[in-house]
Length: 216
Image (cartoon, rainbow, N blue to C red; front, side):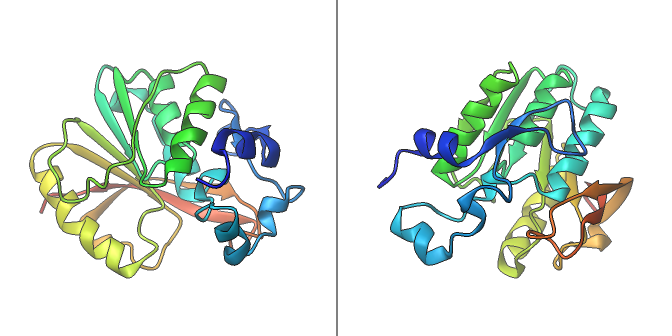
């Protein structure tokens, strides 16, 4: 890496509580930080992939809220937070009583952000940067916020999630209406109005739904 991730994160974010999950504080970028303004070329110059970990996306906020409000889903269980980003959902699961939480994200910068955010919230999380799509997993609950934004990625997730659900695993998806959400495979669990930042989304509030992925 051209830039030290921890130093960069500390210098370019502030500790903030996502508006829909005020119990949790994360290292996030606000409009006051230059991270908002950098182009992909500028990010590449400093060796930084697109910093999805620096923002509390609507799907993750909704999913974290649902887990905190319904802790029985994760209490005593082994949980995977897939495409974890900032670690918001993973932290919520641990706070809700999950026995073990593995945050997974292929961006190594996310690993640093998740470690810093876990420490800030006083929880223990494990992290993996492996691409596990299509693989067997050792977890009873899989949580995924904002993952159906890309056609090819969504096409790879649907059969995998379907198989895991068929094995009896609970798969919960937080989504604010992304383009490639497979609604025919989902059962609605809860809906929230989540405050977001217009610089990231097309509105200041996003209707965000938590879905359970079905095996059939």
